[in-house]
Image (cartoon, rainbow, N blue to C red; front, side, top):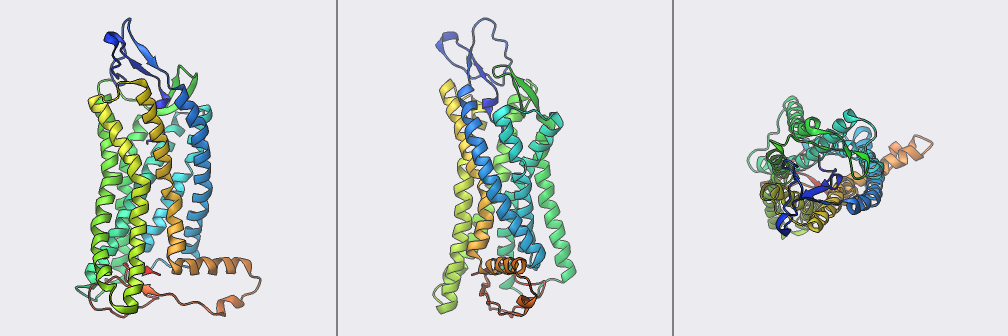
Length: 385
């Protein structure tokens, strides 16, 4: 769990030889010579900045992801594996957003609800954050797999096999995310900050394993929650993008596919914009643990502030996912309008009214096959324009 930053503790530095050697993870027996890097400024910044950002993310994210879940459960059936992944993504984002009020209160007043709540909230944050990133990778894999299958065979898997595949894939993703959240359940606890006189929820390691554990967990988190999804998305979407680019000169259908190509650019661009800065800061912090790069108090404060800002930016991905679905996919917009009209009308005549058709762009590199809109075996690589 990375919401709680190093501003929760004041760092000690050797002042011998006029140097400032970072020693947060070493035995803090400094005899007569040591100074303290007071992080009160960073804590004050967090007490104002984080509650505001978390409140905005909570409001927007709850509205958007609740709408996604409501539409899928009420009007839009789970016909494809990508639909299942998107629904799980909305659930993961919701669970992540529901932990933000606790961290906002912690930034203002400290942690006052006990060690058990600290462990559970930290584990939920990491689990759902990791699950969201892994699900984005799974969506790209499913689109690429459907593209490859479309170029080799037109026989879709049986309904029972497809259902079993969906269950297995979702269990694997959630299982891996839970594993990534287990260290928070183990190491996070409530500790008193002597400088501020209030409790904080943060990871506490034994001195003998502190450096190795901190660096290993940070690097593992960056690798599995960012590098792996990013590489998977780039490989799969580059392959899909090549097919779309080749089809862009094929008349009207090619023009529609070019609009679908812009969907890919938006998905990858939003992922990089929101996740890359945060993971760069996390990597720097991991390298600092290993090689003791930060040797000045002011640099440590700036790194803490950078972590706060970039992590808040990373959290906006939970709010942007529903926006991408609503404003890019006309199929989803149609279901949202249908839901709104259904909730606002007094009669039942709407169900027999006119419905605007949608144009679905199938990302197949081979010959187009006949689609069945009501079939459970619909092409999972479809982008709806």
